[in-house]
Amino acid sequence: NAGVMQNPRHLVRRRGQEARLRCSPMKGHSHVYWYRQLPEEGLKFMVYLQKENIIDESGMPKERFSAEFPKEGPSILRIQQVVRGDSAAYFCASSPPGQGTGELFFGEGSRLTVL
Amino acid sequence: DAKTTQPPSMDCAEGRAANLPCNHSTISGNEYVYWYRQIHSQGPQYIIHGLKNNETNEMASLIITEDRKSSTLILPHATLRDTAVYYCIVRVYTNAGKSTFGDGTTLTVKP
Image (cartoon, rainbow over all chains, first blue to last red; front, side, top):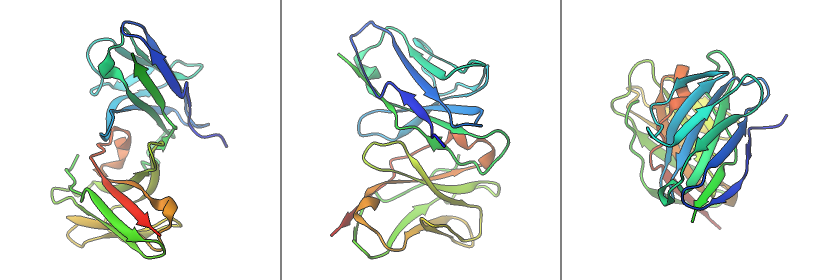
């Protein structure tokens, strides 16, 4: 049973370019969450999505960042016009529909480096 | 979310029990205590959670005080592979995805 899959694992971009990070949740999971971890810091919630809906984006920066979780395919976190401060590890987590236990299943992360 | 306080670091000898404390004095009645760990910048891994009763699974035990203002995660026989950052999170489980991960406790298991 495959876990949460994230790709790419490592991504290098120059300032001003776009970064796209993909997340495929665990089979049967319909809730996806994105977190960002800056160097030497804890994880910060960014956005919570269900299929075709953004449920909570209170942790997303107001500009340049967007997320989607289409009916078909993976969830995508998109960062436009990247800056050096966007360099971080971006983690995706998923959980099953319904209340469940509240447990989150995390992927291995995508590490973005902005030159 | 209720605020949690954890010591920044702890050491433990291999084979001994590791006891990681967490203070959550402002916890509400419907909030659960969750523990995750992150090994060397990998994705966080769920360990255990509880509401008010002590809990045990194959990884660890969770002891919650009667007033629920603090808890302790116990790794009964720590191994070198348990070296990680351990996060204590307090949250209603209906939206546990919007969890607040603080700085956690860096546990170092030494041979």
